[in-house]
Amino acid sequence: MASGEGTERWRGDKYSVLLPTYNERDNLPLIVWLLVRYFDESGFDYEIIIIDDGSPDGTLEAAKQLEQIYGSDKILLRPRETKLGLGTAYIHGIQHANGNFVFIMDADLSHHPKFIPEFIKKQKEGNYDVVSGTRYIGNGGVFGWDLRRKLIRLYRKEVLQKLVEKCVSKGYVFQMEMIIRARQLNYSIGEVPITFVDRVYGESKLGGNEIVSFLKGLLHLFVTT
Ligand SMILES: Nc1nc2c(ncn2[C@@H]2O[C@H](COP(=O)(O)OP(=O)(O)OP(=O)(O)O)[C@@H](O)[C@H]2O)c(=O)[nH]1
Ligand SMILES: *[C@@H]1O[C@H](CO)[C@@H](O)[C@H](O)[C@H]1NC(C)=O
Image (cartoon, rainbow, N blue to C red; front, side, top):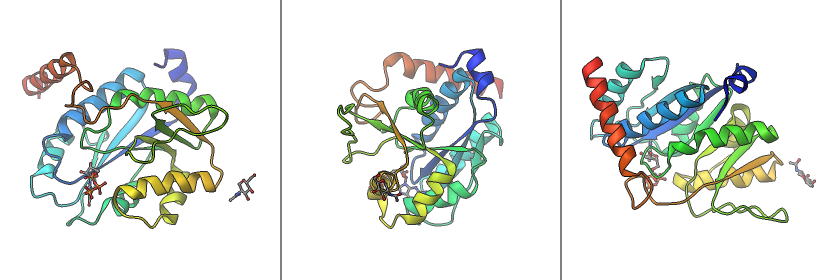
C-alpha cells in the first residue's frame, strides 16, 4: 500500500478501470464498492468507466445509482444501445478514459479488486508497459501466464490503444490475444502472482467479513445519501 510519501511521488498518475457489463446488475454494486475501497485506501487517483451494452436486466439503472452515490467524476457511464461485444466495449471505453493507465477486468466478480494496489506497485517497480496477473511466477524467463483464464491487467493507455487496434479476436480470446501481441511487440510485462478462485462468491474468494463489511457499507450509503 502506498505511503503518504509514495502517493506524493506518483501524483499525476490516474487509473481508469474499464468495466464492460452485460447483465451484471447484481454484481456491479459489489465490484464498484470494492474498487472504490481499494483505490481510496491506496490513495491513487482513479475513475471507473462502465460500458453497458443495453443489458435487459437493468444494469444501467444500477450503474446510474452508483454514479449518484460515488460521483460522476469517479463513475463514468458510457453505455451503448446493444450488445456489440467485449472487444469494441474496450475500444469504446478507452476513448473515454482520462487516466494514463488502464485496468481491464470483468464485472462478473471473477476478479477480486484487492489485487489492484499490487498491480500498481509492480508497474512502478519495473516501469512496465503491461502488468498481468499470473498464477505461477515462472523462473528462467519463462512466463507463467495462464492463458486459459481471464485476468486483471494493467496497461499504459497508449500501449492498450495500440494493442486493441491490432487484435481481431472476439470475447475472452481477445484478452489472450492482447497479451500475446504485447509479447510480440516487445512491450515490458510485469507479473503479479494472484491466488485463483473462480468467483468472488465462490469458496474462498470473498470472506464472510468482506460481505458483512460490504452490507454495512451499503447500509451506510442508504442512510447518508
Ligand atoms: N459491454 C459489454 N460487456 C460484455 C459483453 N459481453 C460480456 N460482457 C462483460 O464482459 C465481462 C466478461 O464476461 P463474459 O461473460 O466472460 O464475456 P465473454 O468473455 O465475451 O464470454 P461469453 O459472453 O460467455 O461468450 C463481464 O463483465 C460481462 O458482463 C458485451 O457484449 N458488451
Ligand atoms: C522484439 O525483439 C526481438 C528479439 O530482440 C526482435 O527479433 C524483434 O524484431 C522485436 N520485435 C519488434 C516488433 O520490435
